Amino acid sequence: MTTFVSEAESAALVDDELALAAAREAFLATGTGQTFPVVIGNSSLPHNRFTLKSGSAGDLVGVKIGSFWPDNTELPRHSSTIVLLDPATGRLRAVVEAAAANAYRTAAADALAVDALARKDSRTLTIIGTGHQALHEVRAVSRVRPIERVFVVGRRPDAAKTFAAQVTAVTGMTAEPTDARTGVAEADVLVTATTSREPLFDASWVAPGTHISAMGADGPGKQELPVAIYDRARLFCDLPEQSTTIGEFQHAQAAVPVALGSVLAGDADGRTSPEDVTVFDSSGFALQDLTLAAALLHRRFGEHE
Image (cartoon, rainbow, N blue to C red; front, side):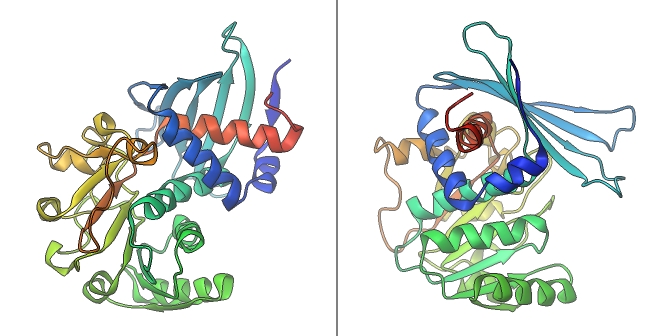
């Protein structure tokens, strides 16, 4: 019998703790699991886009369908549906609607990188971007580092001011809008959460010891980081072959990023000095979605369905 978890159910079940634990499981599973090339498609209207990310690890087999329908007004423009297959038969095992949970999942990956790579005494977080994902990023990072101050950088000053007030209201942390140069220079941890197709800042603004988690580049042509930063940084990502194809490192083909899963497993070095600049590119991969779906099912039913 196929299990179905609706969007409302998964949104009520998910939290930062569940998402972070599922993310850690997914990144560790990259050593033995499999992921497959991302499929990008569209409807008869080319601006309606979707991606399929598939993979398998242990008894988890399936695909995540992420869609973006920009003309939606009554419904959210983004949606996420995770389909799990029975590993023994290939038959449908579960369908989990997870648009809200997907935001937690994405932020958890960036926070996991912060936990593994950022200086332990990191207290200032700069977030570039003021959209829906940004608050999830701030909240997730503040769970793994003693963040005391948040700088907000946005394209529109009014949006940055409004978002900074929201951060303070939700988290209690001091948050203020600022310009890109100041925000980048002051950051112990810098998170980019935009849909940009060009660099958001100058590499020379980044101070020694900064950690950068970039999550916006997940398709051809997307870019948030200046290529010049790669010459002075230690580079990490979720999946190297994917990152250099549709992630941030598509713009630096000579880059050889280290898989974060290897760092978490103790097979590769992370930060080696307080002065290191570390960069993590998160393009998103299917094992994150499969472990998230399994965690939601476990919380909903008390066991993996």
